[in-house]
Image 1 (cartoon, rainbow, N blue to C red):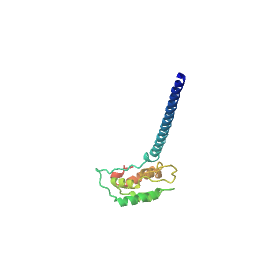
Image 2 (cartoon, one colour):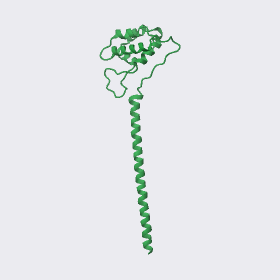
Image 3 (spheres, helix red, strand yellow):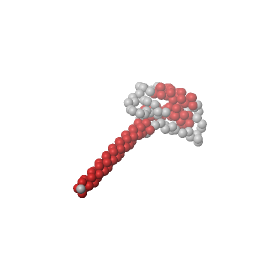
Image 4 (cartoon, rainbow, N blue to C red):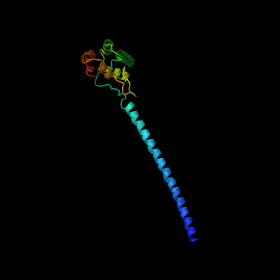
Length: 163
């Protein structure tokens, strides 16, 4: 009889161990899913940062110590589009670039630069916006140093050091 009771106690202990082991396995699986989920979210956030956020366009601010902009918002958009059209693709229409930036003061330059934003160049094979360029990058990539100096001289006196 005593042996039969021990068998019952042993059976209860064995059943309890099986239940506890099932809980441990279930907990391990849940923790595994959580870790995999966190890793996937982390990789997604890292990719978003590298492809988009790190290379986002940062607007310039007006300088309150300089003359107000001599370019209206609609003219800034038109100039930005004309500049992009003149510089996109093979070759640059230097005369269009000069026509659109001649006489532009510093705060006018800021308006044109901000209206330009970041745009795709002719050979952009990157994911996200990391291959996109702002107006300064376009100008420096398309014009020689002498052409840049000439362009700076055509701009307003306070804008000659803008880029």
